[in-house]
Image (cartoon, rainbow, N blue to C red; front, side, top):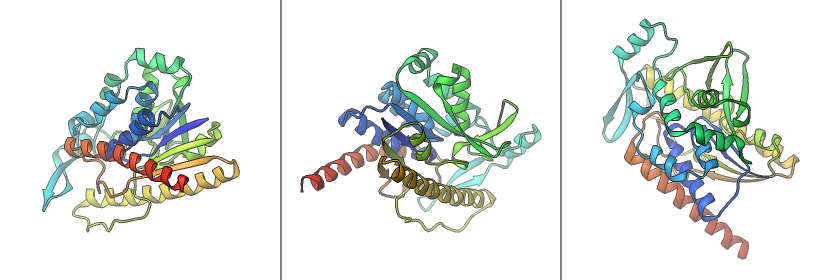
Length: 301
């Protein structure tokens, strides 16, 4: 069974979309299992349906307002580099309302329901492909995997949304008596879960460079420090997930094909820029094309 696994990465998901488009449309890979975390969970339902142009349009036109119902930061551009500053008024409003997070992302849930119709959900649920999203259960201190086959339309849309909620900047969800947050806090690259579900060959899209090429600038404010800290922790989680995945794959004779980003796309994946995300989608497509041509040449030699 062939599986597609897409890691978390916020706006960098556009690169994963381009890679997926090439693998599915040009190489005609037929995936039976789609497994995603965070931004990966936004992509996989549409990929499983073959609605690549539809999700490409979403990823190349989305803005901050499509994600945040209350954005906790402002984007500042200095010397050509985007950084985030605190939107004190919005943060104050959120705390005044009794929220536990700096911002809210309810607009993202609306976008998910707008782009995945009930008819498409039923087609997905009754079809042969399995779609699974990763969420972090903060109450039970566990990682959970939610399959489209096990839930109703509204529930599954909520699980996709929860998988993307990068707390404390986005909403903290409470469901079934538990608090849930971004799946990346538990498992950024769910390779092991794909193998447990029977995958024998896995294409893994990792929205980071394979070797670290990043030297972060000094933190400008408390939000900048928090994002740097979270990015550091998620990078460590990601590396651990990949090592575990390789280990399990080796013991199960599973083939893994990795697609890392060739360059650092952004230092802040919470910034959604239409122009850059359009370029990243094309970059992902061209990178997958180049990588597979190179692989074919090596096999011939």
